[in-house]
Image (cartoon, rainbow, N blue to C red):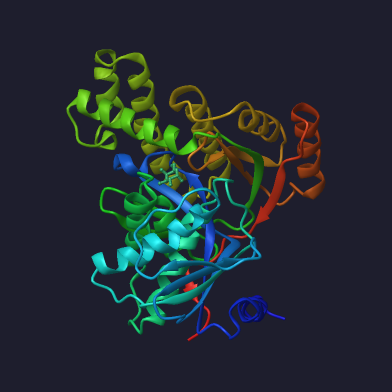
Length: 384
Ligand code: GLA
């Protein structure tokens, strides 16, 4: 049975008829470029072979109905509602935000719908399950409303609009852009000053692993917004709109004028943007060892300058980088919990990953999640 058949059968159980459209979007890893996106810098991301599926059909007049593989009940809201949901219903804000955004983008909206979400992507791991849900929903709604195909850039903008304006997280374009443009065996490069999207081949013989710390800071959205505000304050104090417009040399000449906390935040962003450029060059030159050490340097910068790591993430990076088959490791995504990405050669295997997991369990009293990953294609419709 294919995943789409399984999802169609779940949909039938909940709503009494099959879905009209099924769309799927991958999670993403941030390969490098930590918090550079909303500072006008560059990032490299990749789609991963863990997904969120959204199945929809037209529903009952005047109603939006939702369910997921995590819930046994259908939730119903008045069609067209713009009331933000809270508590256990917070996840409805992603499809609602996308539905509301369609009008802003001049795109058609289905007047009512039944929607099922199905996922094998861990939530809260920094792998962008929310952006995957937004993009799969966007594709599904547009198809349901009879729209022509949408460009990946508009799809990314629609998802980010929902996240910024309805969900209320001031994120950059990394998550939605990577998921919209993801391509098998390629990294997505985003020059966020455009944004301009391009694909960079992932060299053969490299592997990606994710170690999920299974911790998440309770105030994660607030901490993200705080870092965002600190970056803006630093940019203002340095007389620029976006931190990444300064070169490291220009910044270091002016660093002393900033209060220490803002100086550390700005140094992270400006050096990290430069590191992304160095990784692009190292990838093109086939210098995997250099790519790996730049990834680890990125983590150390998050840890010591940007202040968005945790003891759990640091422990995983320390352990992983001590293993010869590991080229580099770093926190991936917003930070304050979530996961570590490890770039390895083919000799790093499940037994080596389990040894890291055992050490982690001994120290923190719980096992981390381990995901060996393939680099996957981006958001797409599965039914035509
Ligand atoms: C989260 C945000 C992204 C980006 C990363 C950090 O994933 O959604 O826009 O800022 O954090 O690089």
